Image 1: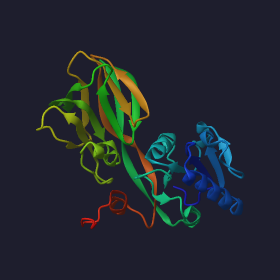
Image 2: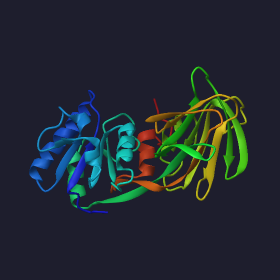
Image 3: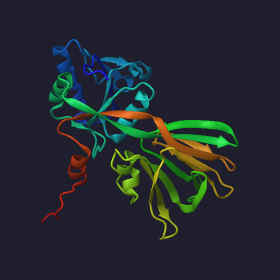
Length: 294
């Protein structure tokens, strides 16, 4: 991977966030004094960016050396899908609320850009999941996700009843509001809110988390997907909705099934020297080790 970034793409989405405006202003000012580095913003930011930043369509970001994802974790996920297949590293800049995937803050973004230019960073790769929907042997849909596959009921149904096969062996039948299959990256997202465990990003595993299961004995389960696969299908004659990273929904009809496997593709994140996963747990989740005094 390049240690000098000549072309930097900016991914973000218009809102009323003062942090987003501040980040774009800092980048514009920094770019004026560093003409060897060119910035290209996703056209969703048109009207907010100033020269010398240029506005391009999403396809125009596929040849960047680096993507700055300015926003919350949803913005980082969007950047990950833009980078998919192109090997572009991502630096998340938190202009949202928790922003667990964001390595940097808007405050001091100019200093962060200085550190990037000086090569004072490292990279971390995050595993992804390949999901393929089949009708018999015919593949109907393929998606690669960084966070999770969310299996939920197709309206008007309210619960899912699904069979899960792990590496060719029947695992169990889930009856719940929905079922999450999350990567380590996704373990701090919906999975965490649903009571699932946090998985360290370097762990090559996924977690199956039923949301509001009908049985109290059903608990989240951590499984390896290394050289193994999960196959999931409806246990009843009802369609299911598959939601991939909260971005794309596919209706899986009765008789069809989805196969999940560890992807050969990875998402590469930029890590600045002062940040890390353990630090994020303390900072963003408030892990102090002591109860707060009134």
